[in-house]
Length: 127
Image 1 (tube, helix red, strand yellow):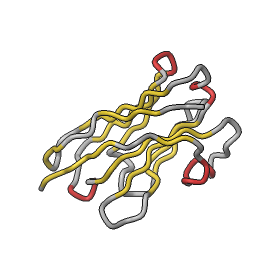
Image 2 (cartoon, rainbow, N blue to C red):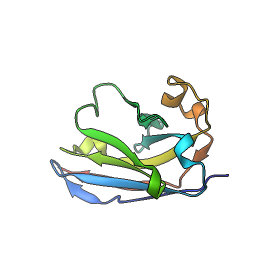
Image 3 (cartoon, rainbow, N blue to C red):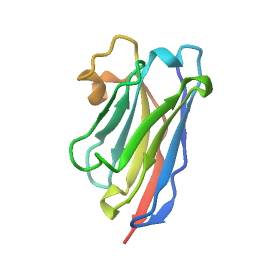
Image 4 (cartoon, helix red, strand yellow):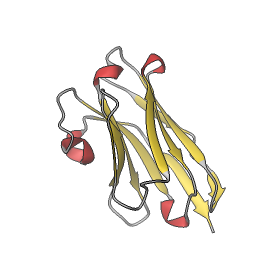
């Protein structure tokens, strides 16, 4: 069982930067692929980024690539999402998720690839 707690969400202005954190419980954090998803009002939850146990990263197409960076600190059992040049369309609840070892790279870009989810943290970007 893995418990995930996100933090760092805030109300910011367009162009600002923000770093989200996700603290995980458990002693096997380093073996999990970790991901960030987001859900905007009235929309379905969508994939943002994932980082595998090996450190390999994948990002969603276009919308966040070049602006968002996912990273992890296995010593702290924490995964981060550094967001820069934020836009109003980035407004959403951001969720952290953990995938069991063995999840494929493609699987780690889908909700079904993840077993454990945090409660979410709100990011609001004003224009």
